[in-house]
Image (cartoon, rainbow, N blue to C red; front, side, top):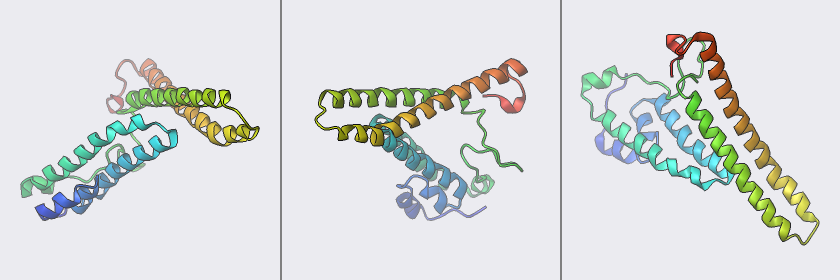
Length: 182
């Protein structure tokens, strides 16, 4: 593995989620944290759901303190660390391990999609009562339809994840294979 880096520069660079890990040579871990941080911003922006941004401080703090703690390990402990993605199991097939996050992800997707649909319905009802031009119909189609479709996809994905886990539990017993435990 790589050697430990300068503590001052690590502190400065760690202010960007994932950059501190990358600076230390943990590219997979840093990439995972950056994608998680900026992906949440992108999704919140696409859904016009500012409440999703409340998790950003948690992700930022985790990335910041993880980088500082990793750099403060002894040389022996530091050399034993492996560079891994946060949510991906690396094997020959490079599969995404859903078994650890299936149910939480499903619940989050269902709540986020439901909220987005509800929020968009309020916008439409607000616009219906203030209609002045027929061009509003085109605006509704161009602005609201993609959000509704995206919201429905999120809900259906969440329901699918729950259904798959239920079928897996029914087929394999409560815990199934050791690999599939939550």
